Amino acid sequence: GAVVSQHPSRVICKSGTSVKIECRSLDFQATTMFWYRQFPKKSLMLMATSNEGSKATYEQGVEKDKFLINHASLTLSTLTVTSAHPEDSSFYICSARDPGQGYDEQYFGPGTRLTVT
Amino acid sequence: SQKIEQNSEALNIQEGKTATLTCNYTNYSPAYLQWYRQDPGRGPVFLLLIRENEKEKRKERLKVTFDTTLKQSLFHITASQPADSATYLCALGTRQAGTALIFGKGTTLSVSS
Image (cartoon, rainbow over all chains, first blue to last red; front, side, top):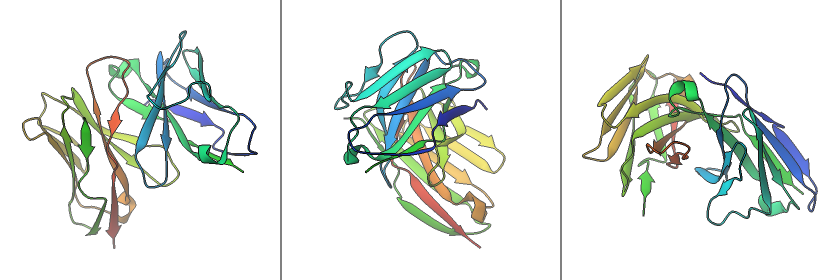
């Protein structure tokens, strides 16, 4: 299957700083990527849909000025958590659809554990 | 409102038995349904996709059924092994390209030897 990578896998930052998380599709081009957030023992919550060459579409309740998404190329989307606070600590996961699979099968990155102290 | 329910939060079975996980949905007409495996601290791993016009799909020891009348999917793992212990997520998708999946909360399966 298609491979999606994320970097970093873990990050610890101080309150008030910004953190950037990268999501890459390694063996396919993804015009659309998705960013999810997951709390312990909870399901994945969609934060935003990242579209190559255009603005991201954010889900209701997600602050677009706090969670900046940039889809700079067909293989890279970034999520920047600005002015991070402890409540932003979570597991962030990106995903992408592989056009070669008819856009239906969705592949996930390994996730990034963010801890804000 | 749209709702996806995975009936059991946890399921414990003995090695060698068949594990059956349930996914029900309401107020939704999915074009397809996907099942994922998620291990602690890791992203979900794609297992199987079944479309609305398909009744059953198999892959090695895995079998998925999809009943659009009952609005239900069943996920079976036959001859289960301790290595199958993980959280299994079901997710629904629409025909609209570029739209995200909607996930259930998952069922954590524990297979004891």
